[in-house]
Amino acid sequence: MNALRVIAETIKKGSSFLFVSHINPDGDSIGSQLALGKVLEGFGKKVTILNQHPVPDIYNFLYGSGKIKNEISPSESFDIAVVLDASDKNRLGDVVNKALEKVPFIINLDHHVSNNKFGQLQYLNQQASATAVIVYDLIVLLNGKIDKDIAECLYTGILTDTGSFHYLNTDAKSHQVVAEILKYGISPNKIYEEIYEIFNLVSIKLLGLALSSIEMDKTGKIAWMKIRKSDFNLSSLTNGETEGFINYVQMLKGVKVSLFFKELVNDKKQLVTKVSFRSKEDVDVNKIASGFNGGGHAHAAGCVVLGDMDTALDKVIKEVEKYI
Ligand code: AMP
Ligand code: MN
Ligand code: MN
Image (tube, rainbow, N blue to C red; front, side, top):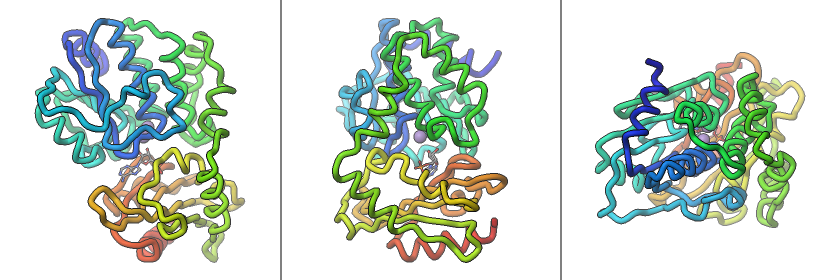
């Protein structure tokens, strides 16, 4: 039996669920969690959604986003945990890992090439452009009822993970799922505006700063943008505040690898530099990011380098140069 079918059968038997996703959750993690959550609630099941970090403001329009927790009481218990859009337990953060310790059964639904297969059951589809595509297939197997709210969540996952349908992972299946969920009356125009056009003042200033920081190596094939902690004295930066910024680097003609360096303080109060990678053609950035304990997909990946921006920049660019 197909692994996703086994997962559907297992889910049907459970009654209380904990849904978790990666640190700094993005549109795909939140969209996937909320969509599957509402479907299971429709079956009378109890679903708690927990992430290490808060929902970025740009996803607050999604139904149920206000109920996503960042901590839970140790007395709560669950039959099954579903880990969505995370390739590795290390990507979940301390709060989530602590909560998972007490859950007897873990299911992982994911699409990252860097997935290291954890939990009792996994469905890993590296061809899927987003975990939301997998969640759609699972909802169909469950005979779940999709409504407009659920469709908006799924659409958000696919929209953000395909970079608005222009990354190399955009395929027929992404569009087939979108064609199906558009039948529930969602507005791609409204969702796009919510996510990409409703910039707050901080974000627009950050964009200006990031744009003016863009540099290129001498081959013109590597380009990067950066935001230093001191620029805005940021203690944290959610994915939402910089969503889509890296696409501007990708727009530079001739550039094969684009990078975005964000210097910030992590939950352990250490100065770190988060690096986002995007690539064109044959450059596998998952491989490069994996060398820095990160991962992701062939054309979109990330990692966190301990230390300040200049150190990270030097190390990472030297490594990227080997792949060009
Ligand atoms: P981002 O640049 O944060 O949008 O991430 C691009 C892709 O790489 C997403 O699929 C992330 O889930 C993945 N990714 C980002 N950071 C990491 C990391 N530290 N470890 C593994 N995967 C990551
Ligand atoms: Mn994600
Ligand atoms: Mn994803």
